[in-house]
Length: 376
Image (cartoon, one colour):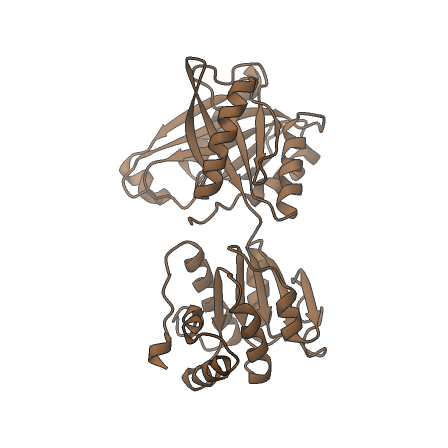
């Protein structure tokens, strides 16, 4: 499944902009042609007082054009869909392979929290994400038949994985069509624009997918784990450190961790949730810990399992686990040696290589495990 887009900054930014501004412009990157570092769904806020949060690209000419359009959008209280064509040199600077075009939805937003407001809607998105749900937030695009045109219009329609919905795009038939398309977006795992045919007209809408942030489970409160958790925290990931040793697994050593758990590592490993957004790193470097952890983890389906171990340790662990009743083939799911081969020497460099490999796996750039069973 494609990697869900990183849209969590929007959830924090809406709070920050609302504390400082009464009205703002919300700019959303809804479509790109070419390869760009920002995916569809990236957002930027421009407050009427001049405050700017976020970015729809990586700065430069596109963001400057969006900021320039913000004043006019606020003055007219009308949403606008910008189509920005880039010259080759501009596209190269932004990470687009050959110029190309970007489409950016620019909307006026009243930030007061009331029923139906954009702030309330994003609050609902946040609560769903915190519950571990994926949701799709649907926005009508202006400039198409039936598109958003009312003054101050910022209608949203929210659909979750269970099929529940809230809000409206202004028409029950349109909401029904959007709900059906949202289920396809959840299956594909990617934000997208789609044309909805309703009552003889076509309405274009943007479907923004929000998903829980990646969860990093680190077994072993070691020197490698400390920078690894700090790096993951910077990325906004949820991190849990698990170890049997109280002197290692402390808040003083892991101030950035969301949870630090001390106890039987095997029992704690069985209690965790493993899904497509869970990434497991085992850096205990001790057979008595690695064996029960792998017994629990290898029966689950996390997105990534990485083990800090050389060939001799890996061979011994495989023999232990086969004797425990696990199929030898499950060992092929473990990334060993762990981390990208960046020439790491220090714990911080090793942690950087590990996190870089996880990011690459999550982006679909690395699928293979470098040390299969046949090589042991």
